[in-house]
Image (cartoon, rainbow, N blue to C red; front, side):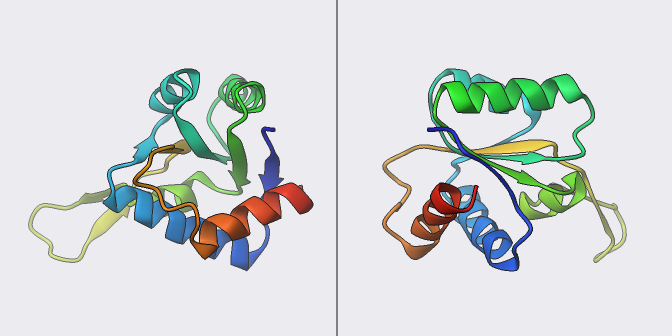
Length: 134
């Protein structure tokens, strides 16, 4: 079933960070509200991460109901700036080497694929946490 978990644990956030990083390297990460909703409706979602301080409340409600209805795991993070950092949405300034700005991200979705190794410990840890502590 679709499960909602409000992430407060450091271990959960670290596991989410590793899973998002792996999905980003394998080109299985979709970010942004419209893209996330599109892939959830196509039933391609494995794990959806939603920011608690999303701009519009209607987006949050829509994504929550879609995840519950279509049985996609849902994790709610506290801040969209943190989610932007996890998904590596940054804007670099042209002539400065190390100066960049983090762009906030309201939601992201990890696409369900055979490339995703769900037998690894981080996926099992997230599944265990979502089943037992939500």
